[in-house]
Amino acid sequence: MNIDILIIGQGICGTMLGWYLEKTGLSFLVIDESKPFTASKSAAGIINPVTGRRIVKTWMIDELMPFALHAYQTIQQEFNAQFISQKTIIDFFPSAQMRQAFLTRYESDQQYLRMADDEKKWYGYFNYELGWGEIDPVYLVDVQNLILAYRKKISDRQLLIEEHFSIDQLVLSENKIRYRDIVADKIIFCDGIETAQNSFFKALPFAPNKGEALIIESENIPAPNIFKKALNIVPWKDNLFWVGSSYEWEFQDDRPTEIFRKKTEALLQHWLKSPFKIIDHFASVRPATLERRPFIGFHPQYPPVGIMNGMGTKGCSLAPYFAAQFSRHIVSGAALTGEADIHRFAKVLARANSTPGN
Ligand SMILES: Cc1cc2nc3c(=O)[nH]c(=O)nc-3n(C[C@H](O)[C@H](O)[C@H](O)COP(=O)(O)OP(=O)(O)OC[C@H]3O[C@@H](n4cnc5c(N)ncnc54)[C@H](O)[C@@H]3O)c2cc1C
Image (tube, rainbow, N blue to C red; front, side, top):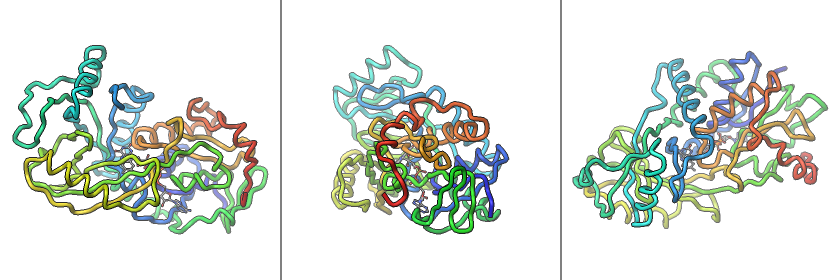
C-alpha cells in the first residue's frame, strides 16, 4: 500500500495532524494501539491562558487560544457534537503570597483576570479564607470524546490500524519509508512519551512528567466553572468531576499511587463543604520537554522521519496550531516556529547519530 504519510499514535497530536493533513489532500494512515491511560485520555482538557506562581500569560497564548477555539469548533460542527466549551476558573488563593501575586498581575494586565465581585459568593460550597479571583475566558476540551469520534471516523474509512508499532520493522531509504506492506513518503511519530525511547529522537531533551487525577461524584459543586485551589475541580459529566493533578518529575512507574489518592481526598475533605465519592483514579505520563516547548519537524539526518510531540501540560492548545503549521510545512515547505522546530537540536541529533537499533 502506498501513502503519503504514516502517523504513529492517535492522541491529541495524531488526531489533529490527521485532521489537517486530510484538508491538504495528502493520503495518510494511522497506527495506534489502544492504551487505556494515555496522556490525552487522562487530560482534563483545560486551555488556561495564564500559568505559574506569577500568573503570567502562557507562551503564544494570544495566537494559540483563538486558533484552538476555531479548530475545535470546526471539528465539532463536522461531527455534530460538542468538544469545546467556554469556562471560567474560580481561583481560590491558597496563600497570602498567591493572593498578592494575582492582585499585582491584575493591576498590570487585566486581559484574562478579574477580581471577585463578592468574596462570600462560594461560601455555600467551599471552605476558603483568602478570597478568590477569576481567570476568563478559559476553554475546556472534551479530549476523550474528540479522539474517540475521530478514531471511529478513520476506522470506518480504513485509515486506522489498531496495533502496536514496532520500530525494528521500519525500513528507511533516502526519501521513503517502508513498514511491512506500507510504503510512505514520511513517517511522523505522535506516540507521546514513547518517542522519548525512540532511536531517532531519544536524544531530544524530553522531561517526562507524571500526572494523576481522580474522578469524583458530588451533588453540590456548581457545574459550569472550574474551581482551583492547589488542585483543579473540572466538570466531567453529569455529577462527575475530574480532580487533579499531580506534577511528578521523579516516579517509579505510570500507575496511580495511594499517596496521591489519600492526599487529594484529604484536600477535598477540607475544601468541599459537601460529601463526595471517589469513582475512579488514573495516572499517565506527559510528554514534557526540558525547555517547555514542543518538538515539531523532520529529522535533520533522516528527512522522511518526523515528530510532533513534547506538548507537556498544554496539548489542547498547542496541538491544533502546530498540526496545522506542520501540515503546511509538509505541503509547501512553510516555516515552522523556531522555538518548536526540532532543527534547533540539529547538533544534538547529529551527535547521537541515531539509527534504528541504537
Ligand atoms: C493527568 C493529566 C492531566 C492533563 N491535563 C491537561 C489539560 O487540562 N490541558 C492540556 O492541554 N493538557 C493536559 N495534559 C497534557 C496532555 O494530556 C498532553 O500534552 C497530550 O495529551 C499529549 O498528547 P500526545 O498525542 O502527544 O500523546 P498521547 O496522548 O500519549 O498519545 C500517544 C498515542 O500513541 C499511541 N502509541 C504509543 N506508542 C505506540 C506504539 N508503539 N504503537 C502504536 N501506538 C502507540 C498511544 O496509545 C496513544 O494513543 C494532561 C496530562 C495528564 C497526564
